[in-house]
Every structure is written in C-alpha cells, then in structure tokens.
Image (cartoon, rainbow, N blue to C red; front, side, top):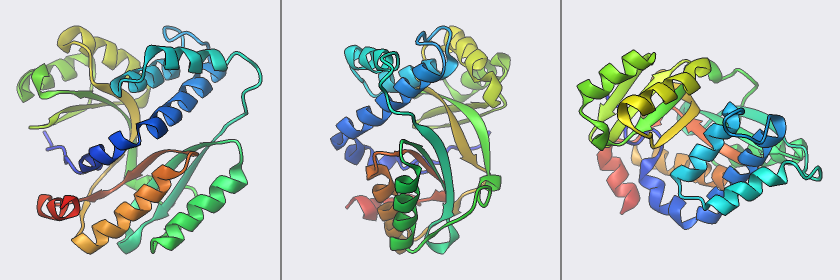
Length: 248
C-alpha cells in the first residue's frame, strides 16, 4: 500500500481555492453542461454527467446551479466546446498536463503557451509527458470511512487495483472503464464517497525545493485562473517543511 502524498494535488492551496469558489463553480458548471450535451441530461444514464454532478456536490455547489447547468445543455444555443489536452514541462523539467474546455482553440493554446513561457517552462507536443502518468479512476474517502485494512478489503472486493491511505483519507484507484461500477460497489460497502473522478496519476513524483515550488505554484495559479482550464496535473511533491514556508 503506497502512502498518498498530501501535497500531490496541491491540497495546501485549499484556502486559496475557497476564495475563488465562484470560478470553481463556473468550471464545474461548464463540465456539467458539456457532459449533458454530449450524452443524456440524466445522471443515471450518463456516466460523465454523474461524475460531474458528484464533483459539484463535493464542493457544495447549490442544487439549483447544477440543475441550471444541465438545462442549459438542452437550449440549443450553448457554444460548442472542444476538449483539448496540453502537455508541457514546468521549471526543472516537472511534467504537467493541462485539460481544457474551450470555444476558441487558438485563444486557449496561445494563453497556455504564454503561461508556461512566463514561468520558465515550455509547452510540449501531445504525448510528450502523458507517458509518465496513468489514466485511472479515483474514488476518495475520508478517514472516517474506516481504517486502512478495512478500506483496502472493500476496494479489492469492489474491483479496484490499489489504495493509498494516510491521515488525510483514502484514495482508491481502478481502471477508467470500471470507475462507475467500482464507485457503486464502494458506496454499498463504505457509504458515499467524497469524490469520484478520472485523473492522470503520476507514476513517480519529484520532490522540489522552495524556489522551484514557488515558480511551479505561480504557473499553476496562472493556469487555474484561466476560464478555459479545467484541471492541472503534475508530478512534483512538496516536502512538508517547504510547504510550511509556502504557506507562511
């Protein structure tokens, strides 16, 4: 059982993310609308929509906002969004994957490229860093779901491949195509999860020093401020002593 890095997904930035809740809601609403437009506007019949709605609920998005985003997909006047994945390297060769939903590919590509350049990185070609990540399903549970052994047994019985547990919670991983089935089985065994989504899981992580962390965080901040950017994934790890200095 591998230990989940509490810094892998930049958890220490939660306070900053909370302040930008309206932007988080906006991006989630866009994903809900696109998911509903691409499939059926019914969470029971549309796996992608179900995951999007669950992600929205995980950050306490109001039900009426979720419902409006679903209804918006059926109005016929919604812009056509393209899903574009960008891959590149931050300072010191840190691999990064940026997933976007955009109605203007030229604008988004230009913006993403400029963010990397301004922060000492460079945008690569498709596949240039994705090979360092695994595309998997991830189901998250709080520590209250049970001890590590209990969660591990439930995960294996549900068809999951791996579990990472620490004092922050439990992260259960499974094949992409099995996420819905595994999530449902886990819900019966452990109750409702905190989150269920598809992720890019780094095969290994690189610890960074304070200066490198500051430059990488600046790049991530710029990317996440962009309305077209949905997710930013990386393969660096911030040691706790460095994270303490970042938060100081």
